[in-house]
Image: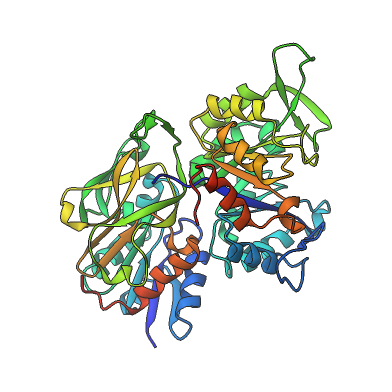
Length: 257
Length: 214
């Protein structure tokens, strides 16, 4: 048996609280990151990702306390993204107990940051978030570009070239999100996913658009993803992580049971 | 009550290991320390580590803690994790080549590029995620853990010990690699027990109860 494909629930955290709520299992406080993370650990999640969406700089350090609390009670890998600007931000999150740190806009603004960070903390700790959006006209050869600011701001950077460059700069993993599909629940952009997974040697986490369990399987089988990330289908109790794994396993995908 | 010291040579997050040990051994004293005297006085030693081999070796030498490893590695239960395993070998190919502590004769090599499995499918590097560990021989550290249990890995380099007798667990990734090694009172693993959910915690619990005999 080889490496298991991972299922990763993703949580938005604002000023230390899980936002948009989580309605599953028997979690007493759906806003408490520790309770939610523990619930997902018990449900069989292979990893957890926190996206810190805290806007106010006054509250920026709250994520460090959240990470400390979660890492001291939940013993599966924890990735934290959002608000990373400097290598020192990476270090502080890792020291607080994060296993991996996701870098997004800061990498677009200054790609060397990825090189500096991986030199300091090792590739295995650095995940580069690749937010891509289709820019080709219907009928043309598909092309995607990197967008920032939640998909609103174009950068003109070709997504595949960017993925290759980030891998060369030492990223240990890519978190690929289709900004076209994010929140739509119609499935991953499989063409984008396949193009990126074919282009790089490092693991790729597919994200954006999951609405049912077959979407997760498709991300692996058709998109070539090494891990699949989803939020709402798990948070609102539509499906459990165990159901997702059983579904994937029934299609011949190796999962950790 | 016993004292478990986690060697802090300044490389990476020790919080997870420390908290995981506190969870499985609530009556023990778990200390994260860079003080040679404290480490020397502990009943059990954990050597973790994260980052690049050259940085880890430099940190071990500059802090003087390489000596603490040498002083304790043969005298009491000692657990190496990930880079804390790799630094115990003789030499690592990482960062253009780095001499390591030579506790376990052998070398640390990078996965082949490209790396493929038996069927020719491409494997990603880093090896990141949950892989099975085949228990190649009985050991007190495996107590209560099923053979071929999945543990969490995150690494691009792997250990090749000279004496295959030290190999206690293997994982198939491209080929069979040694992912758990033991020798006398030393046990070391490439995977992260502190990140491997219930089975990882079980391994750590076993460590807190291990007599140190293979």
